[in-house]
Length: 232
Image 1 (cartoon, rainbow, N blue to C red):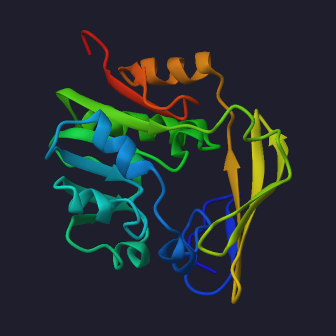
Image 2: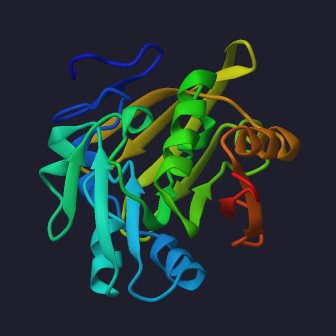
């Protein structure tokens, strides 16, 4: 078990576990999805991207191959050891203040749904603090039925199964979500806190940080492009 676990977060399985319950060896195995395509279609070619919560570089590396410059941030040094070709910074996202701005700030992995509302505010303030005046923030949200279509599973073509087993209310609008990843030779679990956000609540959270939605990047609304609010 990793040290200094965040309250309400845990993980099991081989290898190091990060403070939010992610298993480093698991994320080193997971294939990249559509994220690089979504990002590339939404931002200028060659942009400098601040990737918040980069993990092992699953998305970082494809973005680098596409010609983007990436500054990759994660609170886990074990995760950052797997990142190649990018500037890396080890820090909790909500505490980050680099004193510089970027063409693009990316907050993926449903981090905006942090169970602790103060952490969420810190994450979005970090996004706003680091995005250039004419830049953008790319945010990944949960799908509308993420907490209700349960249990569910997906068998990946590469040969593993991911299951979202449960989402149990723990108070103050927060759920404790339990996920399981089953490979032929190993199984990992992660338990984490997640706060569902309605469209109105999401926009209010952006506004509080001085941001606003520019447009949705996917048909299901799970990826959003945000910009600075006028006057912010």
